[in-house]
Length: 71
Image (cartoon, rainbow, N blue to C red; front, side, top):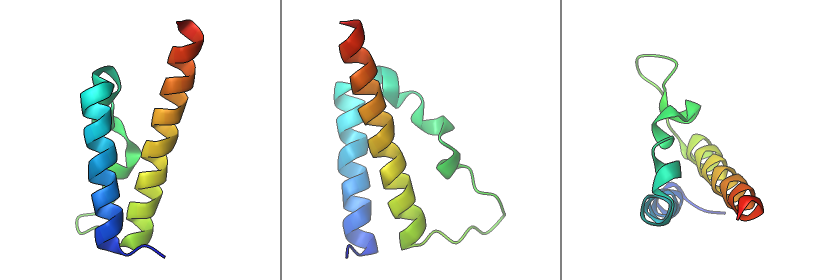
């Protein structure tokens, strides 16, 4: 099972990949609901970060599949 640090490293790598290779998609990362806290002092733990990582992976996968179909 991954710890928080490993998950954050994976998020950073994936975000950098998106920024470098898919700049059109990177623009939408600010709008991902995971980045908008629901309260003044959000508790961001391992489960929240794993969910965010999965969201990023799915976003990239969908983008690649959609782009491939249009090419």
